[in-house]
Image (tube, rainbow, N blue to C red; front, side, top):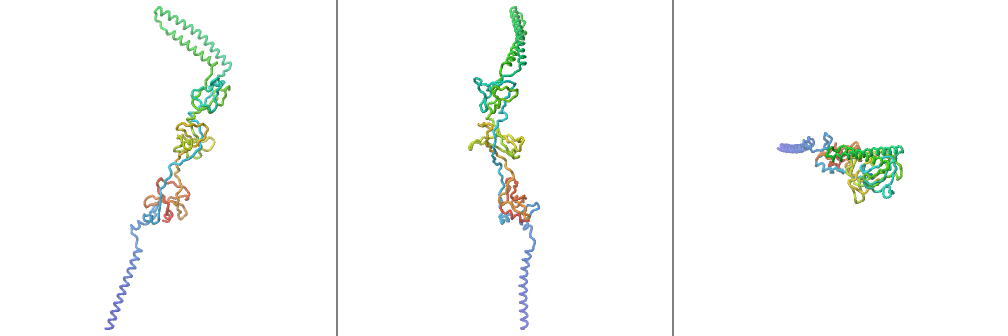
Length: 376
């Protein structure tokens, strides 16, 4: 009996040990199974990963843990520039007066002693000077012979007019309707001869007035009173100061296309609007001449230097903000653009100091860019 009780206790203790061992062993196996079991599709979808197109998928929770911060990319639409321009007259407001024929210059004005010098104010229609035509002795003799021939023709023309006038008076007394067609023709021929004689006589003694064609100032007067000038020689240069053109020199080949507006700075508190007319290359030198016209008149003098404020379209390429550049494993520079709520696109750069071209409003990662570059 004592042996049978001992055998029963041993069997019971063995069963308890086996049960305890089986329970612990099963718990360990469940943990290992849980750690080695494949992840579900939902769990895989929430993991950060590189996408086939090269972009990085990063869930919102991961973004918060990594401290990702972005800021919108904005570049100013225009940038102000300051240029020095020279005042010139507009082509339509600059007039050059030349000698219509050879002759001697005589001053105009009171007593014939006034000669227009540079800087003098003139008005359209003013007589600046007189030109006495210079003709050769042979030409003068020919013109005098023309006057004599016309005088002879006038004697005959006057006789015809008198004769036809008497005939018309007799016919009127006899009440014969002959008409006055021949008398009218004779009168017209006589008047034409009288006018022709006046023109030829004036060509021998008359002077040609040289008048101002625009109102403004005399810019140059290379000739002087008493000079004998040739046909086509420049005598005066006039310019209307209220219609000025400003010419600025630029060495930027793209500045002309980027001009969006311009103003003339007359003083620290006054500006005048300018109209951009275009650009033209400098003759015999590198650079371009930018042309601006005054929208309204201003007291400017040709040759004056003024300041022009230009609003030019900004260059789309600009530098990166602080913290936006990161280095890849191979040492190349990259910036990250936040394309979608959970998608980031890499922007390859030549260097961290190189400019980038982005669309207005694109969001650029400025904090945590280096952490994004660690994902493969």
